[in-house]
Figure 1 (cartoon, one colour):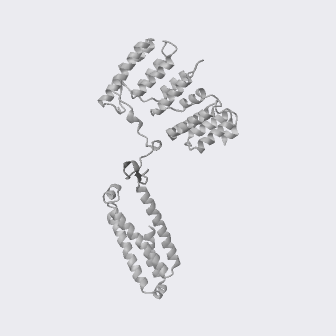
Figure 2: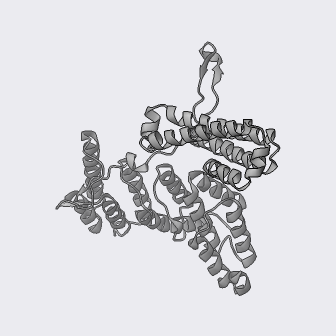
Figure 3: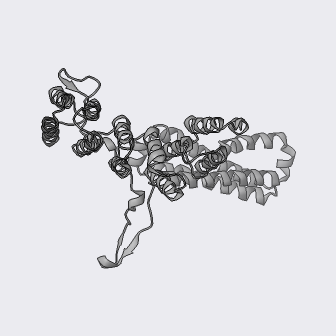
Length: 379
C-alpha cells in the first residue's frame, strides 16, 4: 500500500511543481518512467497471480515462485526510488522511501518467520552416528500433549453389567460385586480389542449407558454399601481398575472417593494423595473441589514445601490445572488463615502466570470478605 501511494503521488508532485521538474536533469524523467513501469509490472503480477493462487495450499504447491518475483520487484523499485531521491537531493522523498523500505523489510521478516514450523532448531552433528547431521528431537518436558480421548474407551457400557454391580453393593454382597466389576472390565477390554471403541455420539442406544455415568454409579454404590468400613479403600481400588480399563475419571467420582478417604478419625491421606496423582498422570479431570480436599485435609498447616510442590506439579500439567490449584489454595482456610496470606497467594498466582479468570478473582474476593477485610476485597 505504501509503495502504491508513493507511485501514485509521484506524478502529482511533478504536476504541482512543473517548474522544479524542468530545472532537473532529463535523467529524472527516465528514472520515473522506469520506476513506474516496474511498479506497474509488479502490480500486474500481484493482481493476475496472487489473487488466483493466494490460498496457502496453492502457493505452497507453486513453491512461492510468483510471491518471490513480486517481492523482488517491489524491493528493487523501492531501492531505485531511494537512489533517485538521493541523486536529486529530495530529502522528503528519501525519508518516505526509507520508511517504506523499513516497513517492507519488517513485513518480509515476519512473513518468513510465520512460514517456519514451530519448534525447529538448527541441525547438530551426531557423534554417535558417524558425524551425520541430524535434527534434535523435542525434549520430554516440552513434548506436544496428545489428545486425552485417544486413550479412553468412550463407547457405551452394557447397563446390565452396571446394574449387577450396583445391586450387589446395595445388598452388601461384596464378593458378588467384585465378580460383576471384573465382568464389566472384561467387556470393556474386549470392545477395545475389537477396535469398536471411540466416540459414541450424542445418542446412547437402548440398554446402554455412558462411561462416565457408569463409573459414577459403580463408585457411589461402593461407597454406600452397608458391608463394612472399608468402602472408601475399596472404592479407590475400583476407581484405579476402571481407569486402567480405559474409563475416563471425572471430578465427581474422584471427589467422592477423596472425601471419603480423608474423613473420620483415621483419614487415609496418603491414599487420597496417591489417587489424585494417578488420575492426573492418566489425564483425568480433577476440579477445584478435589484440589481443595488435597490442601485442606492432606497437607497440614505450615507445610509450605508440599504446597509449593503441588502448585509446581499442577503448572507442569497445564495452565488450566495451575489456575484451579491456585483457586483451591486461596479458598483453603488451612493455608490462607488471614487476608494477608490470601493477598500473597493471589500475588503468586498472577506472578507465575495463572489465568486471570473470574473464578480466581472471586476466590480472592470471598476469602478476604470471609476474614472481614472488605477494603482488600474491593481492591
